[in-house]
Amino acid sequence: MDTGDRAIGEASVREARRNGEFGAHGCGNVEAFEKDLKLFAAVTADADDERVDRAVRDVLRLVREHLQMDVAFVSCVQDGRRAFRNVDPADGREVVIEGASDPEEASFCRQVIDDRLPQLVRDVNTLTNFAELPRTPFRIGAHMSTPIRLFDGTVYGTLCCFSFAPNPALAERDLKRLQMAAQMTARLIDQARRNGRDVSQVA
Image (cartoon, rainbow, N blue to C red; front, side):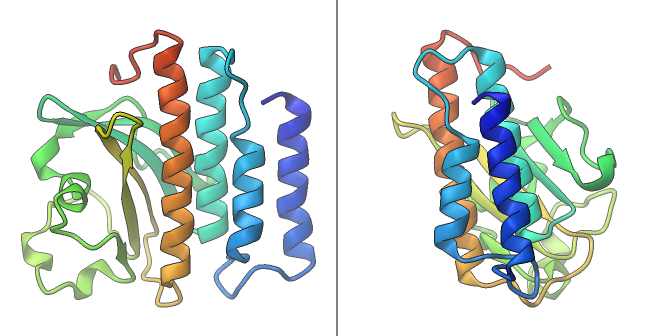
């Protein structure tokens, strides 16, 4: 996606906000979100790695802004590790470090993939199994995560976003947005693989 396309996509988001198309917690209707998502993630079959990577970042920013989360990221799970491939934080805060990794089992991502943690949680602290959840160095209020499944059926990792405070306004329609974004991200990762890039390798 070139600079002109990104500018058009960003302008459409701003226009939606001005026209009141977003709900109480910053979410527009599913159709508008899907339109913006496709625009941000539009890459041609011959797109180079840099353009594919930029498109993934555009998708993350769109997700975080639409759902009014503090952090959105793409994780990769491989060989017992969970790595943060791309991270989009609000205000540039480095809460989650891009390129860092930790044991896969000690992560929310693994629990979501295994269906041990719901994909949509409005307040993590109210979960009945809260005491059994992996510890984090910061407070997590609302949490949303969904697996990224590639064309061959492989689970690459997850598309996650969270806020520091609970968000009781989150609804199933918001999870649908996240799942659409995960599908688009999977296509972009498949594109990178077709380009011969090993997108599982995160330093």
